[in-house]
Amino acid sequence: MLLIETGMRKGEATALQWTDIDLKNGRIDINKSLDFQPDKPEEIFGDPKTYRSTRTITIRQSVINDLKFHQKYQNQNKLALKDHYNHELNLVLCRNDGGHMPKSSLFNAFERILKRAGIPRIPIHSLRHTHAVLLLEAGDDIKYIQKRLGHGSMQITSDVYAHISDKIESDSLSRFDDHMNKINE
Image: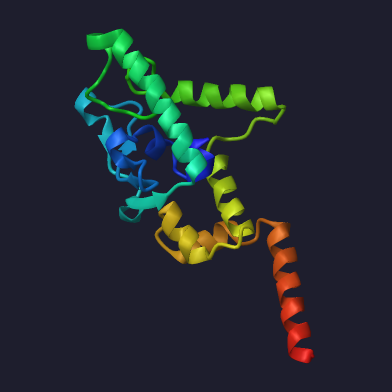
């Protein structure tokens, strides 16, 4: 849910700490990436993919509500496990003991969701693409999408996403048709 709602890369989402999320104002600071196989435990967090990948994005109220629910669930685990909970990581997406989620767990959970929904296997990165297409279909500006996804240039965003949706073309043609009809009146 978090990946499709935000367009974050998997490493960005798994590196999210509660201090990166402002539930009151509906904002997420994306400022690091998780190294799934660090050489040393203290090297678990790394820099985002590019310098433009560091960004703040807004989230919908439904995502805020889901995150609050998830936070309550985590707090129950913290109370139950006490000193056996990995408090110092403060991760949003983690194992029940607060430890970081291995890449295989993330991929396996995603595959189980797809299987239950009857959707063929797709890469988890497809959720990022889906997010961008949904934004385009909603009529969002390509510059906004570029900043939200943390792309280095608008050209990258345009090249990857602008041709994807038939709905975008249909809506655009409909708006153009309405505009031309008003001009010709």
